[in-house]
Image (cartoon, rainbow, N blue to C red; front, side, top):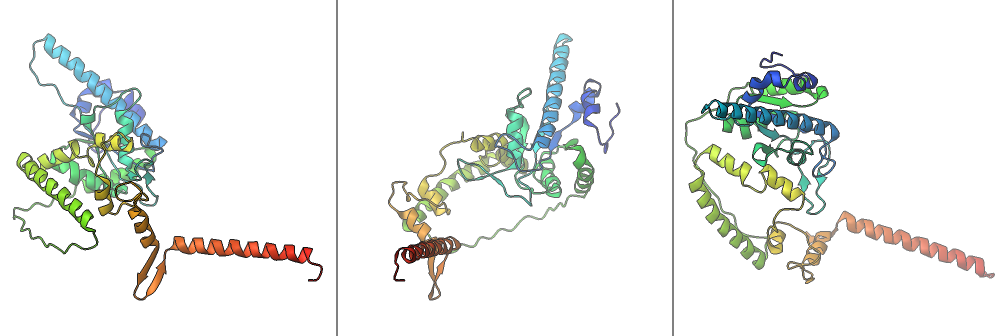
Length: 341
């Protein structure tokens, strides 16, 4: 089986000829695994995407097996050739543009489609992948942006050039047209340095306690950033930090968060300062701060008039209807039991 750049390869043809395509498989730098639908659960992409994952898992297992065999052969013949590395697998897609996101039950946050695919691969029943080989792209919402952010956030930064795009048969024609287009346009390069300016706006809309919490958080973060800036001194270095260490971009950390296995996170006061609602108050002890905040959002006084939220209007309307029904029912009983009316 001869494979040339630009070819569309059928799944059955590749899986039945994995051994004969040993060299080609081991030359792949990255596998781009397309998403394509709302996940069924934090560890389950749609069934057709699961098929993409299963094929990728088989390919990665085959490459690992072949590399282990080659390594044994080299040792037997006292060869010192360095062992090849496995391809990186980039799970693509934050979501589907025309459908609402899957919301993670335990934290109320959206589940990226790429997170579900990454979880499926990392916990694959037969061929689980190593966490250092799996990446999650969390920006795109269609196939064009799949390609764009795969290139700008991953392959342009890392230098990966031999790419295998994986999707289903019904999707492969348009995907090929899109990826051929996006990956062939010339990159914009510049040697001019950036000039950076920063504008500081006044602090309004935060309580004294919330503002102090934010300032403490920002102060700690500033110290951390200065240490990171000394450690990661190239664009690729920053990319490595984001994709390997950062809670919101490293695939294994996204999976842990989706499964409720992450750390405790920020304190409640800090979360409230970012807009988190709470019915138990700032400290979770029932002091009513969260309730008051919720009521203020439902009933507000603006420009000399009282504004009610849709929820409040609905509740009032419902109560009026129920009272009307009750009064009507009462009048009917009176008419039936009072002979003088």
